[in-house]
Length: 195
Image (cartoon, rainbow, N blue to C red; front, side, top):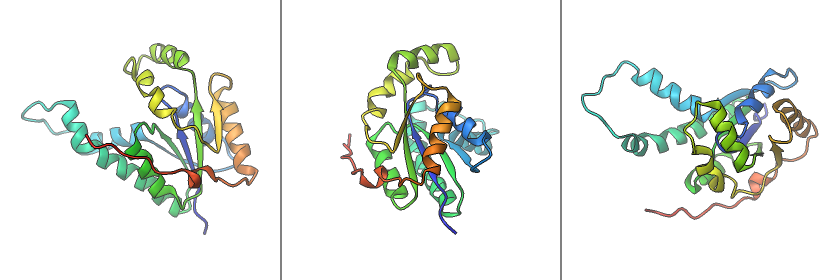
């Protein structure tokens, strides 16, 4: 049995990753499973801690320091497990720091990883964020330079120029072309600064 394809979509919040993921799931040619970082983290907290009442307030940054990096590691490990089990998986994530980038490289290096840049201008991201109403205003802009400093992808989709169906069709065409997913294997680890 061969490994499942990892469709690793990298883009800021509001760039269109989830809309593209939905279209990839809805098509019938290739079966995909969708793992969104947002859903992964929400599911973890909702399933494990929904009925716990803390006896004191804990700052969100403290919670993030304690929980976020291990959850990201678990998320990436789950993706690799899906691929090892022969399942094709759509990864809907934001790679906005070098530590997470390096972890992706370590875990997915030997997997068939199609690395996709989901591209959108900062101005359009800001407009979408304000229109959506379910995102912290300024999140996409704060991620922009960190996410888009990665400039090597197997494929890029520009969500200002193409709608989600067209983006999904472009991704499917690339997969069906049997071109090698080579960019991820060529990327180098980044230096992680310790603060």
